[in-house]
Image 1: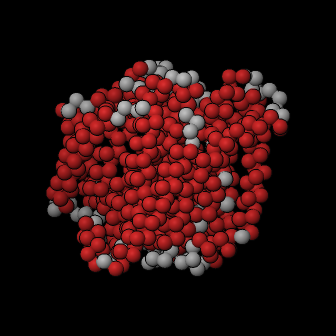
Image 2: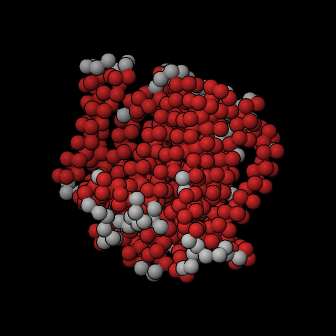
Image 3: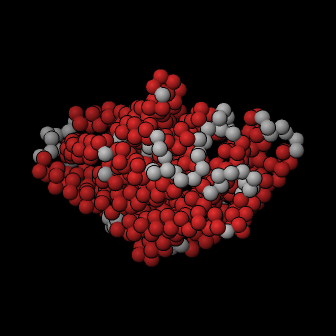
Length: 557
């Protein structure tokens, strides 16, 4: 373990699966901190007006990050940096320095304008919330996209150097700052302290990467002339605009759904956000980890004209993402109540809020496979320098999400059959505020449409073989259903043997059922001689036992 950790601290981690598992490990740690963060928020405020205001305040800053700060994203910067790296002489670091200067200048102006017009913006975007604190929190949180955008630029250097560990630790510190805001700053400054905790987390996020950049800069040549830097930045912007627009489309979708939630029962925004955050845990661990780990290699292979190797990496990443996400989807649906109660169920977060959040989580997680596929397919397009397609798919996804959510909300209030069907299916027919569930359903429908379109067009345009995916889906789904059935049976049995009204009882019930289900999944896959199970074991063994080797055929088999 020590050798593996020290190896990860080195300059390069090149095996895709090994890098993915390293990123997944730190994504898990980051998400665990995020769950601690959400538990503290839930216990302190419950699913009520305060958290509605807190979460609503993120919408404008998050949109700023998605539409402006992400223009100089690492995915657009990496191809340019790769070319500069070949030229040598420290030009890579010199260009990043110029890029940072231009970024701070642009963001200061835009954030200043949003700061001035914040009252009008929040009234327009969140008309269902009337709280002066919403304007205050929005203004404070405008610092967040500036800091995270700068961190994103510096991350392009750490990714270029394959410093995945350094890249992975930053989100940990982001959540640490938010937790400090909840525990330390809120008692002293009130609800504004929560926002200042977010800013502190963003500051720690960028601060971790500054020493590495500073060290690299000390070895660089003279600063790049401003004119040359601007010409290269324009090339980055041309490549990044469609990608940023696609990212902004996703934020617009969440903004529109939050807009709808602001008119629903108090606490609806909090329930929606808590469920979405829980859904983001397996997405970050699986989908984000594989797509991030694959991107530098995909960029290099496509630039070198190695089309077959490019496709083999895409195919391998897709197989392993589906291998993990299909069972994860089933287990989250089966264990949703235990998960939500264990993570959020304390203090002001009551049983009704737990059940409603668990129901929303069950709907969100149906989009886990789709979201993971979209992340990888989009990065495949970006690595190939073809950024228009992901924008098209994201635009369609927004239209489907928003229109279907609006239609479903109307149907939910006019059709007794539809309302009863959904509430009965998720076992929440006896609690109020269930309309928020159809917002999660709208999001899931948009995600699924986006993934289907993305995979279809990518396979057609790049001649990606999809036959191996059919075999995998059958094997993984079969194992997941068997494992889910075992977990459900153990849940039912333990429900009559344990006191599930206590924290110890609910944790024990969920843990034992989950372990039993996972054993059933592993045994089923082993009996099926599942290829991905063997590859996953081999990659983990390399990471934990020996030094990581250079990229080999087994990494993309």
